[in-house]
Length: 244
Image (tube, rainbow, N blue to C red; front, side, top):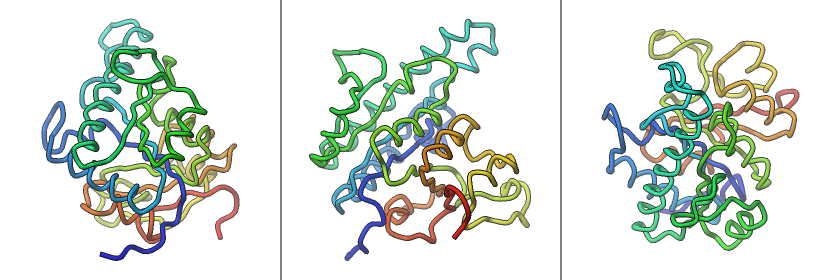
């Protein structure tokens, strides 16, 4: 199938850990994992340089552990390690699809992946390798949404693309309100002022301050991950400044 020219040269894809679960209550659904890997490779094959940040909600979250009485810093470090597990799983799936992939961790785990070094990451991308960034920012109290924003800015991505369970940003929960309105385009100020819950506030402010465009789309729609880098009508765009 002939693809349109991509809208972006380089993107950062933010995946939640829950995206890997499918219909399971825990862990990784290998069918979902390989579908994501196939679509990521298709993007890369079309000339787009792809970086990925993955959460760990399918295994556990540091905040959730802290809410149960564990020290928050310890819980967050455990959550960071869980993201690396997801990164390795996606790396393996991408390689099974014939892609070339590197995992880079904000925490040093030399036996299983590379340390995150910005210049090295950019070099991998320039060589056409898919780069998966693990362990969040490497610091407690920061979500993987914030890590996604940070890495997108650091690698000079053209856009941060966030995968969700719905096809964009709505004025209310479309799962609960059938009359919820989907926004085609918003500014970062809109997201913050309306408290739309696109990403956590730290991540949104980072993108706003650095003029990083954001796209939100539905990962559950098979093929939308491939289409979102070619078609502006997929999902919701969040842009700096005045809407155009």
